[in-house]
Amino acid sequence: MTELNIGNVRLPSEAVTHSFGLLAVRGAGKTNAARVLAEEMFDAGLPFVAVDPVGSWWGLRAGRDGAPEGGLKIPILGGRHADLPLHRSAGLRIAQLIVETNLSCVLDLSDMESEAAKKTFLLDFARELYARNQTARHIFLEEADDYIPQRPMRDELQLKRAWENIVRRGRSRGLGFTLITQRSACVNKDVLTQVETLFVLRTTGPQDRAAVEAWVAFNDSGISKEDLKAVPNLPSGEAFCWSPRLIGKSIRVKFRLSRTFDSGATPKPGEAPKAATLADVDLDAVRGELEALDPGSEDDEPSSSKPNGYPQQMAKLRNQLAELERELAAAREGALPEATVGRLEAAAQRAHDTGIALVEAARDVMAALPGRRSASWPAVRRIPIVGVAVDEPGRREQAPKHTEQRDRVVSNGSGANDLSKCARAILTALYQHGDLSLVQAAIIAGYASDSGGVRNAAGELRSGGYVEGSNAKMGCTDLGCEQVRDAPKLPTGKKLAEYWFGKLERAERLILGEVLAAYPKPIALKAAASRAGYEPDSGGVRNAASKLRTLMLVHGGNAGMTADRRLV
Image (tube, rainbow, N blue to C red; front, side, top):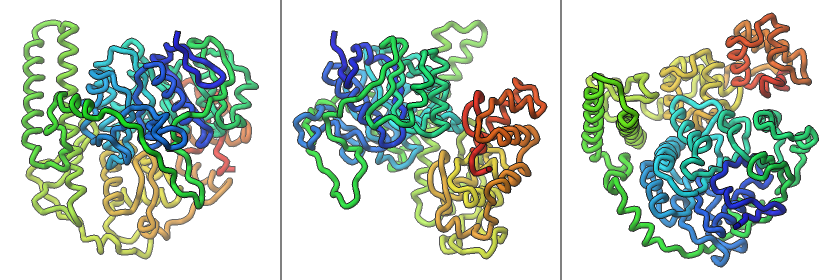
């Protein structure tokens, strides 16, 4: 039997359809460990796909010294070292290519125009791969916390579900999976606990260690307290391997050094970037297979670069909706057979996805217009359907003010300027608290985090250049800070705790008080709730704890919460 030699441990070839987690802080060796797994699978003839949103995997195509000898002869799709480019609408076709040709490859998403584009690609890719795959294949997902988040925004729910299907149920389709992250606490716990084998390299953050402990408790893996305590001090390249099923035991692993080029290494000061020459691959065959797949290349061009494609997309959407309505009309008179249910679900999903793609393409075109919108563009009204915005015909709104008016500096935090009330409140929260997610900023600002007004405000701040980053983590630009520079600075220590007590609801306030009273020791949520006079298992208590975590006022799971040290 072929075995995968990853260091001082050998894994059986069945690992290709197994699910792994690689958890570590930056620089602890998790990407090297993942590349070692990929190299061993390649040598064993086991196909794999590396999904790389940061551009650190292209070095698989060269040897350790940067020469082509020793590199894996696999294509790199997308990124700065692309053999073939990727665009946001190609996810379905790439999944088809991989399944039909049994292709191993790197999908480098690092040069896509936005996080939204990456998520569009990954949603289509994951769904199609899960639906079509029938042979043993392994998927590596870097920065998994961005795509399987603990607290997904509304537009991330489908993406999280698609990858959750692969982790939880992929083995029946021949799919194995390696989840790679430096933020264990930010990965969805329902997904992380389903991982069958956990490699934990050096992990120092209390929240991230709590996520590791939750996996240990869920999987009943018999891990000792001594092992858990040793996690923050592990040398780079070493890990605890907790594998109750694949290996049947827990073991300390020292990963061998990857034999391919370390394209993800952190540059050293004063050191010139290292170059590599990539091994040759047969790209003509890949191009031919890709062009032969449906849908055709014309329909798959990004609509943002091809606005004349809108009529065809609208016709396609109408046809899909008509198909769905016919199916529903035929099925209304009786019970729905299983095959019909599946067909209806697929038709509804196709109609939904086409609509989403059309809206995203329209947004891209709007964003690309110089300076301001044309007066012929209708106003945008947010409609709460599947979390997207659509244009409402027949309504107009005044074009945004010129850039020089946007850049005007106001003298105080409440002065009149171009910002709406909600946008100013969110900008003030970011100025006072530092980088936050949109959910956190909205809650601090006193708004419902999932409201259309908050999403509109975030778009307003981005288009004006007041904030940077994604909804998962955004911060003020210099221009944004200038707009709210007179907003009061937050206090520190106990005065900061008093500030929050004035903003929180009663249950949140009392539970936070109990967690603070226990500091620096952790306290279980049940104990804190009982001391605060609440039923420990009530939904209100769990909601209060969730909000306190969202606001980063407490850390850790319900088994042991600790107050943020800024409050003491």
